[in-house]
Length: 371
Ligand SMILES: Cc1ncc(COP(=O)(O)O)c(C=O)c1O
Image (cartoon, rainbow, N blue to C red; front, side):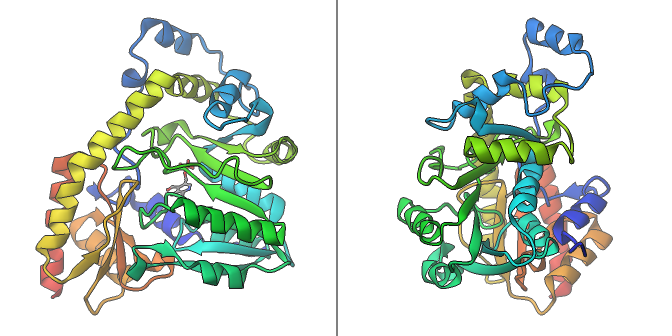
């Protein structure tokens, strides 16, 4: 197998903890453990944990807590994974191989794109259209899906655009999957990170061959727990568990416990509220920054996730722009090239406001020298 590099993640892995201003992150500033577990009882429970191997598919309590968020799901419909990344990895590994055909929404977090191509599958894209406010081209989807299609993959809310599908668009995507008899994989990791506070409807319950992947990294502000999940049919979940034996075996017991605390309904609401407050207090900063660079950027408002995605009008490739910005000013943002789009940038705005402003000021200064 020839591994196709996951270029965006490689760039982040290399630089995100080295630069002065990391504006490449798509989630909000993370929650501290002490803030997640203010109660003495929970703290003591954490300290009593013996660091053995836990229940490798997630404790029944954690699986039940996850299942309770998807109507009609039970613990056998849930596999706990090491982040949404592992959930996506397992699904790709199970379904995509030489001769298989995958249809995928673009732009997108490119993990699945690189993985399924590395596994030998053919990937056909369908696009979100900027002129339509990043709505999907569903005719293109219909043309791409064939009886050979084994998997359709979408991300909702979307990374990098922050766009959310309408109910009608969701229905059309389900219909396309049903026509082909394909699995439909929906990465819903940004669900709960909407600026409006309206929880994006899940695809769960709309189709029998559905796989939802998600986790605590974005809407909950807990990427360091590395807790994600697959929700699907009991059969698919059982099969995914045996693949999981080859990858990470199981989640850390400390993370499993902290995830159970985070998913208590009252805590879940508080974490979502915290995320929403950060998104809404920082969004005007980034919007105003974009508008200030009159005509240089054009950006459709992002609806979810701590990310904005903008087109820029400069005669420089986005990889080059991002690399020189990092080298010269120690500010990290993401090149549109990582989403197979030339003159675009993705900027994360979920950090502390002063930090965000300082990173943006350095970026302005850098850009004014380019012009
Ligand atoms: C759409 C999407 N899926 C998965 C991930 C990885 O998430 P996790 O930290 O839960 O592994 C990301 C991270 O940016 C993402 O944007």
